[in-house]
Image 1 (spheres, rainbow, N blue to C red):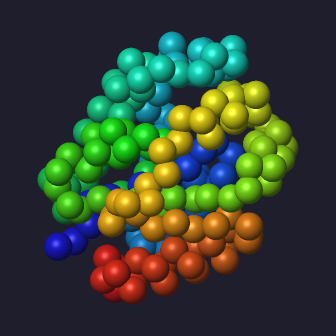
Image 2: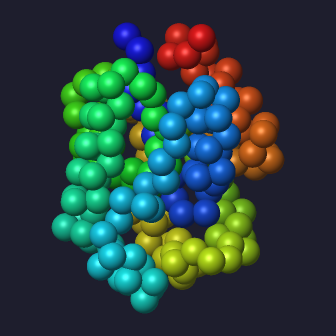
Image 3: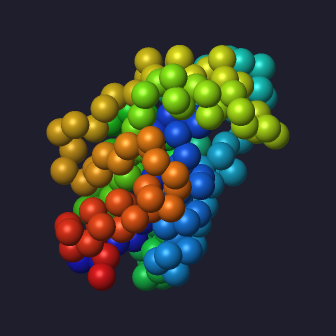
Length: 172
């Protein structure tokens, strides 16, 4: 089975967009930043330092799931950066199809918080990182998830991701 999507997941500031864009380029696939699927009211809540609720997230996840479905329908792969913090969110993106893989970018909270604090021009304040870690349901028992530590530079993380996907037979 060929993959429709690879979702690069994890808390804000872990490097999803950077690693996702590199992976998409390497595979010759499209890249989508999940932040672009948020409705304006979600962006405003986060900008104000208010954590999103599940009710806020469902329409956002449904929009991302539609993008995955489009890739599935037209036979092109897509890499999407999306936090996908809870199992229910990942299940929503899987849509019981078996053609979605998740790369879970993990790391020490202090490292990720420092990276988030150093970001400029993004609406997500560093003050929300603790709520993201609190929301995260580690995908330890999910067979379609690959954990990758973010303690290296993005090109090294990309190499680890490609090697893991190849070992699984997900990519050539």
